[in-house]
Image 1 (spheres, helix red, strand yellow):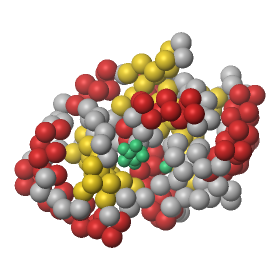
Image 2 (image 1 turned 30 degrees about the vertical axis):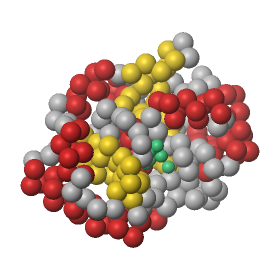
Image 3 (image 1 turned 60 degrees about the vertical axis):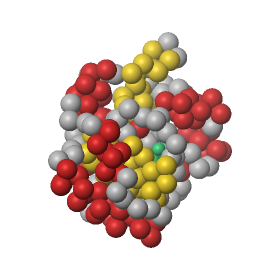
Length: 242
Ligand code: GLC
Ligand code: MG
């Protein structure tokens, strides 16, 4: 049994034909796989992925960059309130939004998520913006984590949370083991998944940031892109974890 914990955008999505092939492969071995998506998307965006972008229904989903966990029951996403109460203890969204007013170069994403505040940023200002937030958070005692991916997405989430920590919590809760879990990703906001697990697939189209943080570790570096890379890695781990 393998638990595949995969990012969505740029990992599963990007090549529809390859995604079909991966979906068919998983469907053909459905009893052998647990499927978990781990993404920056919220639940509306996740449903769009399932209804219009070719994703199959997973067994669970880690959404909003780890700040929400959903399990799937009778085809519907059910929020994990235990995870929410663990990570919300030190979270103050108002304080984060107030601090953001003092940072230049942020463009709203127009989303409203309970435990995540996100902006679009100008890639050339990414590091400057990260430093500015760090300084403000320190000065104002704000406990939050800053994750920048693709140099243009800025996510601010509770300090004790990310995709990796959410996945660890979920695996334990579902009584599954990390020995048989395989993560997959393409960008910087997947780094924490690779920190928390030791089997992983870096897709061929992965960004430099993820390559850097996963280098010299024993992950599968796929030669092909998007879902084709995930399938390539899954076949490798099916042999290895037999
Ligand atoms: C998705 C989310 C967005 C987030 C980004 C990076 O695009 O919709 O809110 O900033 O992922 O995690
Ligand atoms: Mg991605």
